[in-house]
Length: 250
Ligand code: SAH
Image 1: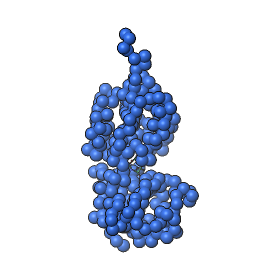
Image 2: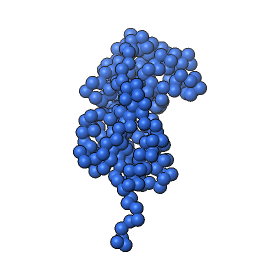
Image 3: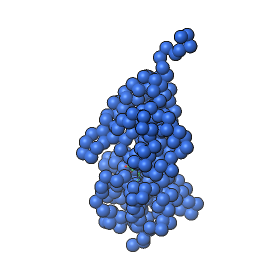
Image 4: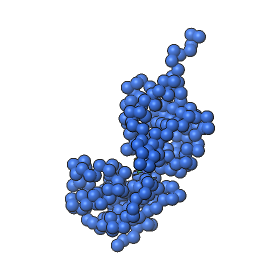
């Protein structure tokens, strides 16, 4: 068969699933999911989205079970490459947007290194989802001219972030993976000049039916923040938080 390709050409779509509800996925994401032969996904994907995977597709879970370890990143790369090389249509399904704290960049580098064809399908990142669902604009002409996304779990190390810059007014700070570090984050910002009265919010399970919003001054938030469960949560600090209907001044 002269026209038969020597090796079947697989393809990997790195797809953003958004923050939870299936109707917050893009139409392109839905298309790739419905045509997938293999879906490699992690923990934050909602069951509503997982239900859209065709029954015929192979599902591979690579997330963390509670107290357990996730498949190492190199293992995920190897999986994607292996299935693509076998000629399959692979979807790497990731929470939110693949290029926002999702290690999508590393997966793309691994595919490029192996010469595997791929695309990246953007998704609604947690900051956009939670912002809309909690009534907290990320920017606003009167309050915040800029908005910064940060990985909160790195806040243990004082040198990771430029705290002085982050403490300046006129910006919205969004910490992913940060609610367990709320106390350290607040302490560092306040030490660098952020007023403790600055409005701040924790949005958990943002955009999902189980969403909760706790919004008050940063000082009160540290006192009030309940024990944290496994739900994903976002920490938002800045003046626009006062626009949330859930905001209560002290
Ligand atoms: N790529 C993802 C982020 C992955 S990091 C995105 O673009 O959204 C995982 C962190 O995202 C969680 O620790 C949490 O801080 C945040 N997150 C994801 N989904 C969320 C949701 N529905 N509500 C609140 N925070 C969420």
